[in-house]
Amino acid sequence: MTPLSQSPVRVAIACGGTGGHLFPGLAVADQLVRRGCEVMLLISPKDVDQQAVQGVTGMQIVTLPAVGLKHGGELAFVRGFIQSYRAAARLFKSRPPQAALAMGGFTSAPPILAARRAGARTFLHESNSIPGRANRWLSRVVQRAFVGFPAAGGRLHNRKVTVTGTPVRDGFHAREAAACRTRLGLDPARPVLLIMGGSQGASGINELVLRALPLLAGRAPDLQWLHLTGPSDTQKMSQAYAASKLKAVVHPFFAEMDVALGAATAAVSRAGASSLAELAAMRVPAVLVPYPAATDNHQFYNARAFEATGAACLLEQKSATPETLAQLLLDLIEKPAAHERMRSALAQWHAPHAAEQIADAMLLPAGAEAGKGCCADPESVASPGIRTSDTGSKPTLSRCSQSDRTELREPGRPTAALPERRAA
Image (cartoon, rainbow, N blue to C red):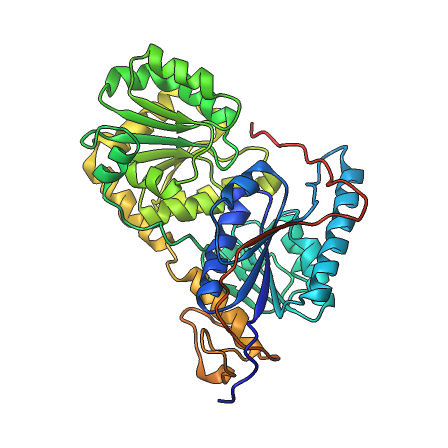
């Protein structure tokens, strides 16, 4: 092996817009930082992104003025796309990355195109069973794609697709339930039902739970509740729990999801791929209520894949009744055999080395052996589970010790306004 320069490998990860894009990107970023890379995390101005990166260290946080594509908002989307591309191109001109990874969503396309123009090798990860529009389009231009669900590979326009699973952050592993419950102010000995609607909450789930509350309160009065409502329904749900004299902790948003899942006996959840990966990692049985307006109905197909293997219960919002939800939850909470069967089935969906596999595969084409600042023979370094390989060009590695936050925008222009999308 021949030593190269001491400058670190620079990697850009575009992963903002929703927690489902951001959190897997953070997991990969952490692995790259451990390997000595200099990581730029490119996110959106949305509150969910800005809150999620609070406390993140060891990497540069860059906010791009990207805007999601909505009906009637096409002009704002195009303007945000152009501004984001130009801002990323300026950044990469002075600090060109050797590799760039898209995690999907509206934040991902402009910086990946800018990175490709700057000479970087480009990659994408698709967490969902039905790839999103950004990744479907980007799959034509990136060198390699990684997917969370095997079914997604055939829907991408790329010859080099690897099934890695969806990365989860380090904290998502088996936890002592009693300690997690105590940390949340709950009774360590009593079961906990976690209600969550994804990173932005879900009014549809909140309403369904509200209607099922009298049934569950009557049949499981010892059940404790941890409810992540999103920004709109916190007061309404808090009042409902108080009126039913139930022990409940209610938050609009909760950053420590490893603690929340560690405390949970069972959960009610949307079916975004990142949420499913975290449920699988923590072995939390769940009733999945897919977001009905998700693009290409991808959450339904995510949930159906889990249901088909016994790893979750699927309940469609349009046909859900309070009675059905209550019975499904009581079966998971009160029937130990059903609970354990689902926990066992969840194990097959946990990919504990997904972030490592993606990080290693991104560095191998650059000729970098993880963490050593030297040129590695790509044929001599193998990542478990990686089925395809590619070789390419240069650099080396050294530890990145600083964390910076940067907001990029067009000179003389404000960051594009970004309307919040409320889950239905």
